[in-house]
Image (spheres, rainbow, N blue to C red):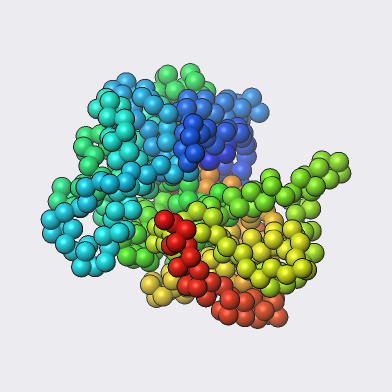
Length: 510
């Protein structure tokens, strides 16, 4: 009987093909590393779409080379990095490089949203937020700076929609993958009604956008052309999953609103799953969950654990070389750096806003470290980065608790940073909550497999699928004495930093 589930996970730095059984055990894995993007000018981040598709094909073919049984697969699903956009012609061929989510291009001077909507935003003090959204929208940049490309565009898709078309020849995508600057109604989880202000802010012809289906539903079937390229069986059902953060939350088992999912990846996020639509920050919507009709309340630290990679690249050559010499993982030596410094980093406190947020904390935000003295070393800086990220996510959790009325009582941590025991213990101590890893590192792929399992009727619903396919790995409990020390720094220093530094950030922003 065919009952295994294949998940294709197109992340920022690699593409993985992952074969799971109905109990959530990982049977086979093939990972293909990719360059996240190339840049032809400061702030630009683009990639050839064929890099993504080629990696998908190679990852799938790698499974068969390992001996994975194609006939055991009941369904396949795709999860992908969010907010990476592509322009396709009528044949589905890319018209230009994909604009990757890390891209920082902006379009200033656009006509503001007018009429009753404009007046309402002005009264509510939200005109600046709307203008920021307009400037950030890739579609506005394309129509302004590359009108010939925009005119030739037949479909404007996220990366998930592009991969779906390559696999099924259909211009269709999952509701749960619509995260970005498009006229999407996040409350009703559909394209906006014609009267909605988003059509003014991002004037996209709806005909350019794909048809949408809920997570756990059929997108299409693998075509003969896709089967030849990937080795997937022709006719295999492709089931809608969600964007990578949404499937990560699901794969971490965070089905209930009191369970917080921290993602320690390129972007650090806090997510909780709710049945009710709640905006933690006004005009910033919750995103679609990988469970149909549910919402992921999210706050993001844009650069997140990229800051850890930045530190390792700029200051960690010694550990990298020593690890190579000793034949061990460099992460073990970086954990030793953390342990060489006491909790609180001897008073060095970091604010992790290396890239600004929209409303958390604000578009003018910058990163900062304060409290330097002659005792501080690069080990202190490394620990302060980890502590600063956890402080920022704790502040996000307090906002989420207040808006939702549901306190977070447990945390699950996914992403690359979750593999550091030091980071996990530090997180437990700062939050004062138990912090657990999912039983598998590949949480986003597992979440996509859960969607496939429900769509293929391997499990009858999401509750039973989550119960059968997810469980906890190692749990870290907070140390009461360390938590008390962190509370002093968090409440007495960290929470005051942004307010005190904001005037300087605004001056720099100009």
